[in-house]
Image 1 (spheres, rainbow, N blue to C red):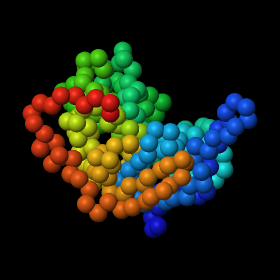
Image 2 (tube, helix red, strand yellow):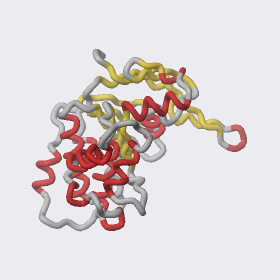
Image 3 (cartoon, rainbow, N blue to C red):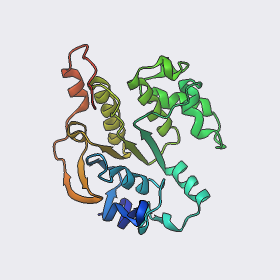
Image 4 (cartoon, helix red, strand yellow):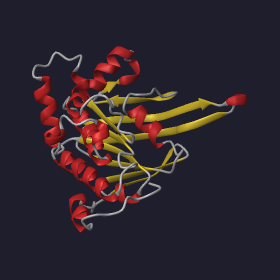
Length: 250
């Protein structure tokens, strides 16, 4: 694949359970992600999809195999160099938002910049909030925001360092339909601007908004297909009634 931003080869992650039993959360996975792709990684709970994302995002190390991130072999890097690489090139969005409850939206977005030497930290954070349509909620605390708004703050926090890649692990898992489509519309817009996005989900309708779908089962890739006609999240949002009851069991 030309212009690959991620190259993973023969990745395996083994966890040891009690009694000496081994669990292969990731089992000999090889894949490449091109710069600017929007990839959905699908699989049931326990399939290994989140473990794979954590390895590709340099949050975890494989038992075996290699990962090249923008040509850099992350396996030879120490913890400090890995942290710097993540801070420079990667943004993360998680299902549970991971916002500090006693810190307002603007301050939550500023957190990744705390140890940077960048000027105008507050201006950068406000710009990131503006990108997700939350300028007016900058001084609200997480408890004062809806689930969808909290996730948008989390996306703004992931954007504030201007990363090349965004990893999103079940970002719509705690949201209703309307909020889910709002979040997917933001990801589609970011992807259209050139960012690489890798999104983990167990929901086919959410994966349908991505441009490539990788299905994982028992730690292995069982399908890797191009989605030639991704759903338009903004159009899906427009088709919803003005108010919709919250979806359960997402």
